[in-house]
Amino acid sequence: MPGKAKLANKLREKCGVVGISLSDRDAARPLYYSLYALQHRGQESAGIVTHDGFQQHEHVEMGLVGDAFDEDDIAQLPGPQGIGHVRYPTAGGVNECCAQPFSVSFQSGSLGLAHNGNLVNADEVRTQLEAQGHAFTSNGDTEVIAHDLARNLLDDGLVSAVRETVERIHGSYSLTITYGGKVLGLRDPQGNRPLVLGEIDDGYILASESSAIDTLGGERIRDVEPGELVILEPDGEGYESYHVADAPQTAHCFFEHVYFARPDSVLDDRLVYEVRRELGRQLWEESGIETDVVMPVPDSGRAFATGYAEAAGEDGAKTEFAEGLMKNRYVGRTFIMPTQGEREQAVRLKLNPIKSTIDGKTVTLIDDSIVRGTTSTQLIELLYEAGAEEVHVRIGSPPIIAPCYMGIDMKTREELIAADQSIADIRDEIGADSLQYISIDAITEALGRSETDLCLGCVTGEYPYDIEGEERDRDISRPDLDVPEGAAD
Ligand code: SF4
Image (tube, rainbow, N blue to C red; front, side):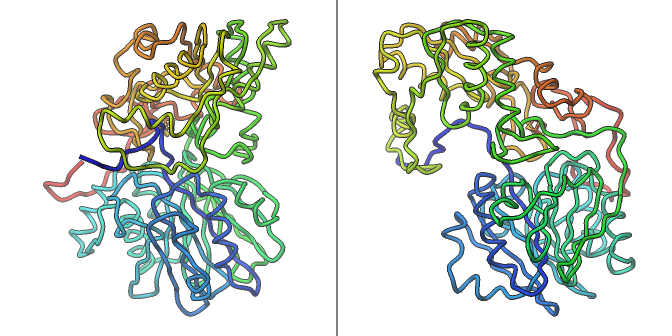
C-alpha cells in the first residue's frame, strides 16, 4: 500500500517555544519570525497567542510556520505581548487538539501556554484534577499544566500559583505563558530543556534557542536558570525574576548540544557549533583512524567532521575533510513511497554521493548519532557503490540504549539498534569496516559539565527523573499526590 513514511531515522526534537513583550507594537510578527528560527524544533504545527491588554487572540494550525500563517492571520493577532510554539508531537496525538499554544479560560481570566518537554507524572495530576471537576479536551500533558495553573490562580497570586504547580508536576518543561497581559517563562527545576532570555530594541524575549533572538536583531542576555520564573513587564521595559524551585543538580539534555539545537545557538553559555567541533576533536583523540577523506553526514555531522579533520591534521594525519554527500534540501520530512521494498530509495532521494570524492578512497563517515541504524546501512552502501575502498564510521554521541521520556521521539528499546547489540554487532549490521562512538567522558569534557549535571538517560539507561520501571541516576522522586484509586501511572 502506498503510504507516507518518515524519511530519516533520526531523533526528533520536541518543540520550540517563544514569548515576547514589546512596548507599543504588536508582537505577532516578531513571534512569527522567531518561530521560523525555531522551525527545526518542530514541523507538525505552529501557533501564536497574543494578548491586547483585554483579551487573548490565537491562531494555531497544523503544518510548517510558513504554511500555518498568512498576512491576514498575523493581522488578526493584536497586542504587544504573546507567545508562540512549533511542535513535533511527543505526548498527545498528532492532531489539532494537541497543537499549541494551549489556551484555557477560567473564572479569573485566560491563559495561553506553550510547552517544550514532557511531564512524567501528567496522568497523576490529570486524574486528580478530573476528580476535582476539570474537563480535558486533549490527552496532552500541556493541558494538564494549564489546568493546574488555572486552578491555583483562583486562590493565589501569580508567583505563588506557579510555585504550587511546579511543586506538583514532575518532568521536563520549558514553558512560555501569557496571563493577564504578562508573558512568563519557566524552566523546570533541573533545566532539562533550554530557555534563554534576550533583549530586542523595544522589548524582551524568551525563546528555546538564542538563534530566535538573533533573528530579531536582539541580544541574548542569559539562560533562564533551572527553577526560575521570568515575568516580562507588560510595557516591554524590563523583567522580574523569581526562583520558584530548587534542585541540587541540573539535568540538561546533552543531546540538545549534540544534535537538536541549531549550531548557531548558544545553550547554557556554550556555542553549539563549538561544542560539536570539540566533540569531533575528541572523537579523533579517542578513535581516530587515518583515511583518505573524512566526510560528514549532512548536515548534522558537519561540525563534528570539521573538528575531527582539524585534530587529525594537527597530529600529522593525511585525512582530508571532504563533502562527499550532497543533500537534496527540497525533500520534506515525509514523502510518498509506493512499497516497503522501495524504502531504500529514501536515502537516495535525500543524499547523493559525489563520486569523484569517494571513488578509490578510504572514507571516515561522521554522524551525530545512530538510532535504528537503517540510514547508516544505506549510506554505507551508497559510499561503496560510489567506489569507496573502506568505510569507517565515527559517531558524536555514545550508543543510544534506552528510550527518552522527556519529550524526544524515541519511545521503545525495540527502536534502538544499540539497545541489545554490541558495537561489533552494529558495525556488522550496518556494513562498516569499523565503528566507534564517542565516550560519555568526552561529552562531559566538551560541555564542561559533570555527568551528574546532565541528563544521559538514553545512553546510560538511568534517568534524572522518577520514571515508572526505570532506574534513576540520582535521589529524586515524583511529588506525592493524593491521587484517587484507579489512577494510571
Ligand atoms: S533521555 Fe536522552 S534525549 Fe532524552 S532528555 Fe535525556 S539526554 Fe536528552
